[in-house]
Length: 347
View 1 (tube, rainbow, N blue to C red):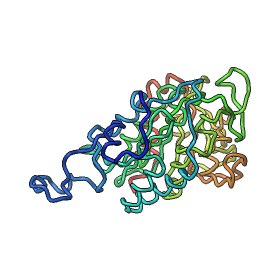
View 2 (view 1 turned 90 degrees about the horizontal axis):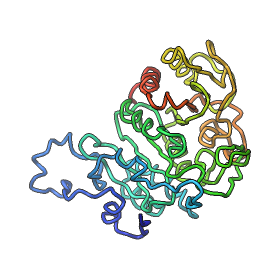
View 3 (view 1 turned 90 degrees about the vertical axis):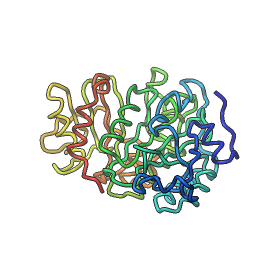
View 4 (view 1 turned 30 degrees about the vertical axis):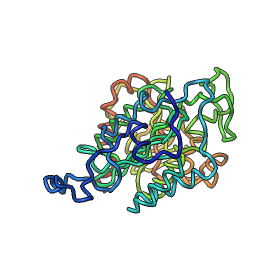
């Protein structure tokens, strides 16, 4: 699959990227514009994605760099700032600035049609480099930002993220665009793992939960800043039993903290599973299995001044790091039900 070239017109590039533009433009006063219910029209003046937005949250559409390929590339100089500007401008309603900044950041924007009306897609204008793909629901969203940092290593976390985004409905879905072991180079960020080589080593530069110069991290930071009361969840898979939950720290929390609310709901949903928490809270089964304390999204949300190299010393009571055994990812409805029961109402 060829990598798409920068500098294409927006309409052509969207079409090549699998996000073709509708021929209709009701904003220009077409003869058929009056036939549509105004409430069913687009919420933005962005090009319309002709395919369902969630179609693009698949391996076939993303074309992720594979394990050992060394094809993942971090954002180029200046692109993180442009992408952040694009997200901030789009949320603020400045679509012209958002489109221009997105283009400079290596992204294209379109709005979903029909059932996807009001969902803005941030789509890389080049595929094969491992850039994240992002969907933002403009209105009538539950305050939840869903991230899948390892969708092509921790099986079924990507469709689980899609399910949560659609069913709750959540505000944002951010999916990594690369296998976590794509690159052989190491990140300078804290922590180590054996998942790529079988022996302990630093995290790879393609591991989106442990790097900071990526579109996945930038999108998390921008949306977390813009919606400071939203919960932020990282969906992971693990080889251990049950679920290991944390808020990105190992600090004690009270019964009303998101990690406690979700943990309690998961324990009720899976009474025969090992549901443990890295945080102590009333009723928790405390076991520090996989706690996400080096996760750069969690560190940022929890207020670390340097998510790459400095652990969070406090909890913002917003971040959720959830590791799940395979059978739970294969039948994730109880997880969805637990989230539905505890995530705050539409804001």
